[in-house]
Length: 301
Image (tube, rainbow, N blue to C red; front, side, top):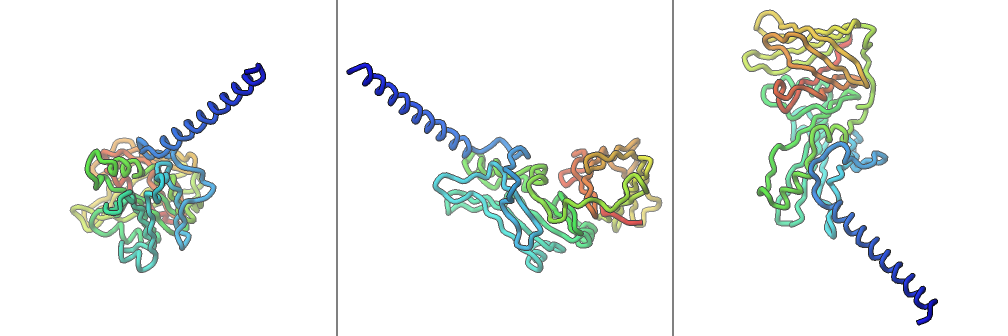
């Protein structure tokens, strides 16, 4: 073979190696993308340019998580269902919107399982529900436009431990923080009508009580950075008043309490400010449990 022929042969070999290497890399990348992730964190959210799902009434927008990728050669492993109006109420009292996201196993003979549920209430409807006895339907994650968005996430997998379905279900099930970042209530980006720092503003909510007909929580924020957190039990004598300090930062207010008395809160508590409510975003888990601190509704003076 001449020198020129050997040069052509070597060039073709380099090209073949490059193509093979690129194909192998692409295959590995696809395989890694399809593996279950260790957890669903906010960093897994895709581009927010276009939501994955918008409810027919436009109330809820949702961006799917990075772990919700397509299966090779199969249909997508998730399904979203939405009901509004009377159909939503039939599934949950006072709800005006009801969204459920299900994990769909690869095998058709396996049952699907709920990954999370989102409920939409009017502010008045949410207050009525919050005052009823029993456990709340979930944790508030958004408010705005006179509505409240509540999330509910199963704590246990329905599938056999160490099975592929259990692994994929656990990888696709979001955390509460991830759901806050990936689900948006229409009008929830609106600012508050309260005059923070210029006047005393108040928020409150009425909740069930173990040994009283109800209890009311009222938070008042004074312009000087002081605050009070008052808990009143119906028929139980004087209200319980706790002193606190508040700080406003990046659209959220954080309450830090001093000495906490009987029936008072554990802090600090952080709330996102909506136009009609304070939505809890951070709280001591040992003091408030899985459902978190209560949503508080704005009370104009």
